[in-house]
Image (cartoon, rainbow, N blue to C red; front, top):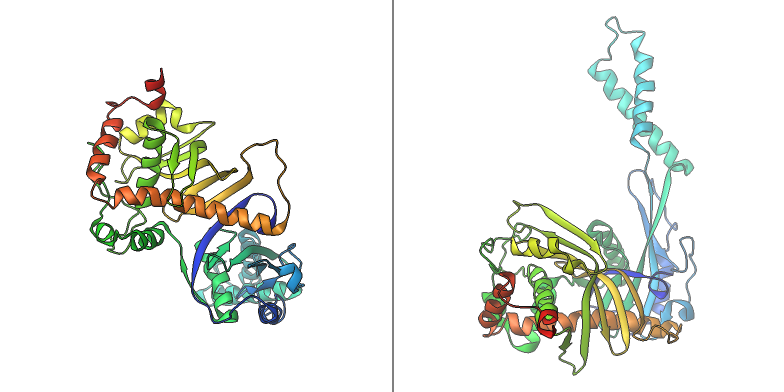
Length: 393
């Protein structure tokens, strides 16, 4: 059921141009027009890509009541391919070459014979694909939300997502842009009037072991994805030294903690990676040592509570993608509504909560008080500032 039940994983894409208008019968007709399996080709040479109903892998039925839920549309994109295991292809190659060996004085196939054998193997692969052998079916769930002009894709593989979006662009004539951390920072800076601060921003050198170089940053002037790493480190500092409750721009508050997992990497590319799994990974000494040595968070498990909803998920900092998110009530004994419209609203609120929290960081990071905040953070990294738990003691 994709976004409609269970845990949720997604990468977001902002719809920048949509000529289709309000969701309705025309959208269902497009789904039917590009349904999976309608015009299959040789899936060994090129995967067959088409829409699916979204209820399960083999669902190819569409209708208004099922696929249009409130102000959102839910469906799937299925990708059918033929993936023949390499050991089998090698075995076929040996069989083809064996037929030449008896006629060769030296017992070795010639270059021409190898080429003929390779062509024979490729022909056999195409025949197997036509028979339906070695067929692999995969599906990506899609939630197209009109409220936020956002497409949520239930996967984080860039190659797969590009395939899904290519189909949607052909079918609906839309244009989209990935909501990475840098894209989100650009939107927030424009909204809060901090464009000048964003344009002047460069990766921060947090301590004596940091030079401000980030190997996974391409250095382009319009790429601010590295702010995601700084955001997670800032959150860590905030929750450890100040309070685990942060006020948001919409007047609400969010409380949070790091939980379950934490992945850190050396921005210089010299000291390797650190992956920590624990109920509270930031409480472990190896986590503190890693950030003191200049490593930055790249992925973290977070627990957030806002507006009586609790979100447990993993956040990839640069892409701002969400993994394995579980949504429940702040009071675990309360009963969650299973209405599909409520479920979609909760997915939307998860994205909003992460965005508002990042906005709280951007208001500081892109403002004139960042130097003051940075000095406090650097003291924390140097163990000169007690944590809020130590203060309480």
